Image (cartoon, rainbow, N blue to C red):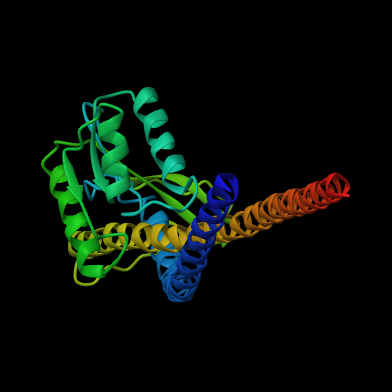
Length: 295
């Protein structure tokens, strides 16, 4: 009976866990659609402004500080993770890429952690972020991206950092989110075969300095915003996959425990029947012996 009681308790617990996992999957599925739409809507503009900056990099290295390389004394790294767990190894992959980056860095690195999971894992690894931000990847807005971009550009302009990189999750599909390292500053030329425009094809109005400063700032803000959106979509995609696997495992475990419970219940019934039959036989035998003595 004690075994059957434990099995009933375990079955109820696993069913509850399965229901929670299924509920979290449905919530993340609904949020994923919105996140996907925002990611796909942001990519064309981000791609186009990246191409413009790639074209301008041909002539802008001496005209704007965001393009020129500097002697590397200290660099900044923005790590984007989720604010919550229960999404498989999504956050672990991002933190692992960051730790590999820190180990291979050519200069000291100031880490800016965006997301509670990244903050927690970095501190667990003995790394204290210089700045920490919560509720950015969970609810990304362009205002938040602009604030982070301002932090980056101020540190870069004041020469506290000579290079800035981003680590975030690149969203591909629900089943595929890959951690990515991206160099934000100085603005690098793309490694592609795309034909770039030459210096003579540009006409600046009102003047190159104003235009480059505006475009470079928009570029930094756009890339930071895209990192927020991509990470949010990746988090929901990873959670959908993880919760679906958890729900399926809960169903399989419930079926296995139910079979064990039925087997134990059948054994208990058989034992009780055997005891009843044995007791009845014993009573009948006793009555027979009593009748013989009386006779």
